[in-house]
Length: 126
Image (cartoon, rainbow, N blue to C red; front, side):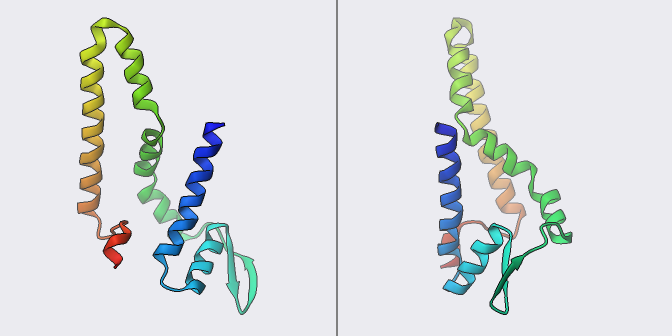
């Protein structure tokens, strides 16, 4: 099914991202293991604590915007626009709503990048 394909692509991208983000292979392996809840200490693999103060702070700070992004990454807007366009009276409303939603998304992204010192783009690391 398509949903499983989208999910597997997301997992592959997240693990592939570690290859570009980390500067050496040992850091890459540590991060990939941490992504699945494992750690390496003194050559032994163990479990990491999943909830700590840093995790709770990160969840409180960065949960709403990524969830909104996940929802809009799915083909929801085109489906809503198609349904509205079937009614003759709602064609302009559908176009306006689509443009408005995309404009708000871009504005929120720019505001988030300006407000935060963390920059998620890998190209700024090189």
